[in-house]
Amino acid sequence: MRLLIVEDEKRLARSLAAGLTAEGFAVDVVHDGLEGLHRAAEGTYDLVVLDIMLPGMNGYRVCAALRAAGHETPILMLTAKDGEYDEAEGLDTGADDYLTKPFSYVVLVARIRALLRRRGGGSASPVVTVGALRMDTAARRVHLGEAEITLTTKEFAVLEQLALRSGQVVSKADILEHVWDFAYDGDPNIVEVYVSALRRKLGAAAIRTVRGAGYRLEAL
Image (tube, rainbow, N blue to C red; front, side, top):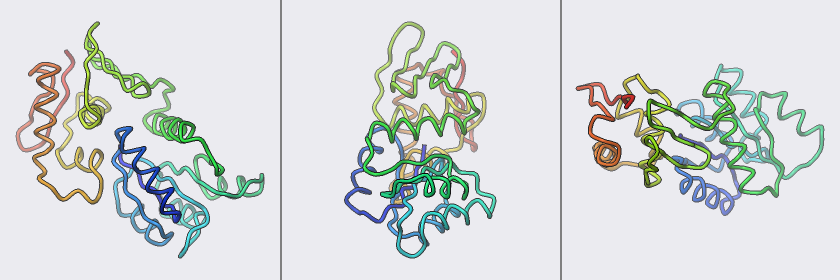
């Protein structure tokens, strides 16, 4: 999943980005409200973590502008303020959730995962099942039948993209957009490297290449 963090406290932004990258997310960071609005409107993000007190344009206005333009990407707002009025204003502008600083990193990750599950179809279950394959996206564990399969962070993220759209063809560009961050400018064939690694661990028949289109996860 690809996240955008709009936060002007650079140390906090770097810390959040490092932690969320380790969790398997692709993360982009900007420090200005106007740039955040532009990036959120133009980019393909699964969720935006949006601070309220920002230079250029505050988080309330960024959120309201995105909603007015029809963007439905989940927005988790962050603020150092505390009070019912601030929370109401944030939610009234279209935010999906609200977290007051200082906050627990564990709580932040839990809120992000809950919003992503809600966006994915309203199911409260973090478990994705495709045939004999079972992915627990909260615990970051994968089982094939009774056997647990150990995956690296990036392998898990690639497989998650395929599993969430099982039966559909997922393009290499889609995988790059959601698993690698905006700054990645390396070889796009890196996707093939990770698909090959997944085939070695799950079986060659697990992921089918659809020539010229992408990859499809097959039910085993």
